[in-house]
Image (cartoon, rainbow, N blue to C red; front, top):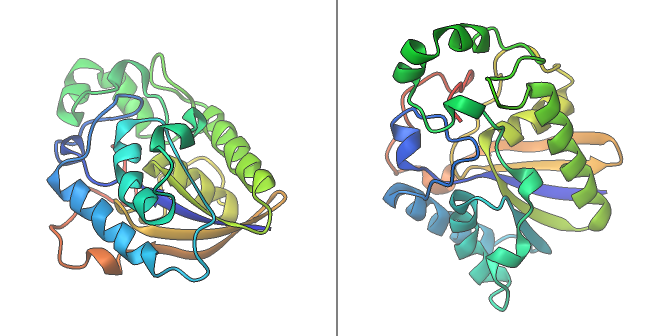
Amino acid sequence: MTELILIRHGETDWNRELRFQGHVDVPLNATGHEQARRLAERLAAERPPVDHLICSDLIRTRETAAPSLQVYFPHLSVDTLTDPSLREQSFGIVDGLRVDDIKVDHADAWERWLRFEADYAMPGGETTRQFHARVMDAVRRIAQQHPGQKVMVVTHGGVLDMVWRTARGTGLDGPRQSDIPNAGLNRVRVDGDTVEVLDWADVRHLADLPAQPVYDQKKLVVR
């Protein structure tokens, strides 16, 4: 049995611009860096403490993880603790594009995307089913490698959605049903193939920061 503290990366300018980030390497903005700093402060008081840290290999997760790494493992480099299988879903030809531009330049793909079908992929990207398999393989592998430990996993909104759906048994079709704020705390327990949500979307450490970008947080079609 392993406890995972799942963290969505801090805010980026592309979150504000409503761009699909996917596999594009986008850094944190000033708010994102402050979120990461406060996250580290919050986790410094964690008892029992975090035993291990791992993150996606994209810069927005590495920058989010860096302050917490200094708290727990100052002798390690974040670049040695990355796992590309924790990346966001790939959105193919629309990675990096704003929603308004996708609606015009890829209207058919956008209409299909809004159906939230598990086996649909943006051209050149991953289906939700393929993405889910990648994510859950990574989650189970991390749990197997760290039995009885508490592991901080810094990743992406889509990854957290796949974990939530697995824990709740909601299936892969349909829009997102959970809030997944930037740099929030989400705790799950993994025991073999069983995933249990212990706590979700805890943002008490971010209370007075600027509001999240304005769009449907539940559907979260921009990742």
